[in-house]
Length: 322
Ligand code: PBG
Image (tube, rainbow, N blue to C red; front, side, top):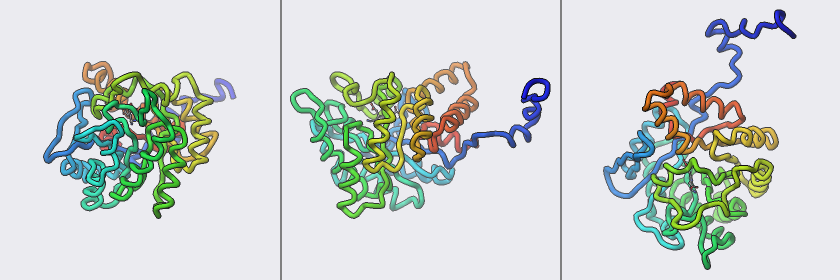
């Protein structure tokens, strides 16, 4: 086919033709909205680096989740910011921990919204790392036990799906085993399978108070330069029992999303992270870009690359626009 026989513009000439040939349809079904939960009552504290996002106490969170349900968004992802932290992150699996309270409250008051809970240590440890520290090292296998306890306690409290974000080796298998042994064989795992050591987590770490006190996360999160390794990480998580595999961040890793989807055909989630959110907000507030168009373009691109679902701080806005 060559010009003038083939004129691609023919099918672009009006909205109905464009609708008919559109290859990627972004829908509210694809969205997951993240939230930061704190203790207290009536707390709704805006996160300065993430305008429109708040640290919410459980009562305020419940109102938000009701709104999410009203918008028909299928799921929320919860991060806890505990009142007390310790060296081993024990508050992460406390029965009255912040996530546990949140999950119970949502389950009681809002029906039919999937509660996904982030399973990690960094928000709960004084050192801010995602694993247990021994002699200055982040130790892998000791961490698995704690992660399993966190996952179990989330599920006990009402979490519908756990999402381990720590990047320790073997944690999906350890969590799967713990859930199965405790009668929770039907609870799925969404694993942060290919999670990169990214500069784009900056605003999140401010929001979640989880910046590492020393060093960085490069001994457990992936090197930005690697894609074949991401496929090995994903394979491992699938073999260990992951139901949904995640690529994070999204925008600098569209190639990884594409390859993961093509190679494994598993449900793929992409995390449109805090720094990606903040960049759009910042450019839009200085009048440099049109926020709505930019957001819908970004989310559509992530889907086009192969993601089945997108975790995004724009989920509510996008749901209203769609
Ligand atoms: C915790 C975690 C992080 C994010 C999600 N889970 C931060 C990190 O790894 O430092 C980042 C999310 C975002 O930036 O929106 N392990």
